[in-house]
Image (cartoon, rainbow, N blue to C red; front, top):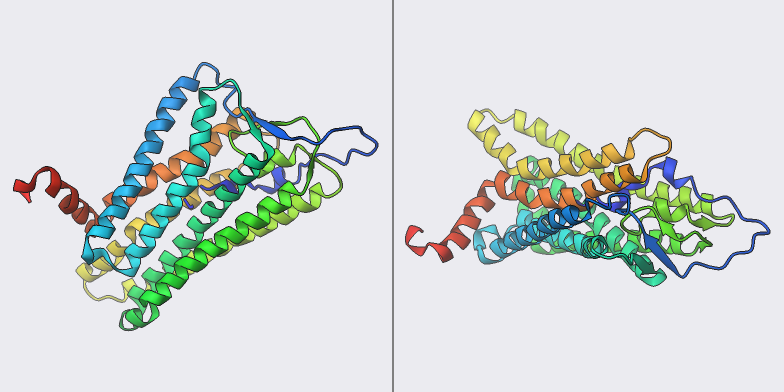
Length: 336
């Protein structure tokens, strides 16, 4: 998110920087926000629009190709590819929650967004972002069972069990989205209403909130999100620790290579996913420029979803062969 996802920007240095209580101040509640993320790049906005539009279209087409290939190719009707299909859906929905609005703002001088629309964007981006992370964790468990317990694979990863894992991932993402959005939008926003980002993200919104609850909400949201993400990361790490140990016990080099190749695409996506998250989360404490925050936000909003279908298409041999068979047969039937 899961591909990184908006959750990645919840560093404690930002989350604890909410506005101090405004005792005795006269203010009116904010009814809309202004997203000013790209306003600091006035001469580059057209270039950004074209670049991000192409990357977004490639992300959509790449994930749709993956889903269509899995749907048409019966040999791919296995738990691993069921989870990959669910991952593609979550990625499409995540990018749809943020990027179209971002592209529209790049061509518009009116970057205002209503209170309700802002809350909706935050809910859906967190929901699909966390769903992405949960599905990556489930895929790690699937590879662990396939390599470490192959004789029990069909029992542990039955169709019903796989459907439950996908359903729980979506349910968990929805709960996280609801918890975070409810906590943030129960605060009072009393101006100014300029969000220093290209989307409704938690840290810049907390800077616009006032009241005695801001610090508590900031720490609570940060703790919940970081705990969930670290939990997913640790589960994936433990899965691969057992996987590596099992692979090293395989006597033949060919067997070790075959076993590891089934994990290569997932492991690469996980490294990219959490790699960008680490760059954002572990960035030096202290004031950050608007330009830096905006460009860093692009890595998990546009770049990571863009790379994901490329990695799965190139690093997964079975999927690559199936995509060639499925689509090239339509274009060049005489070559198939």
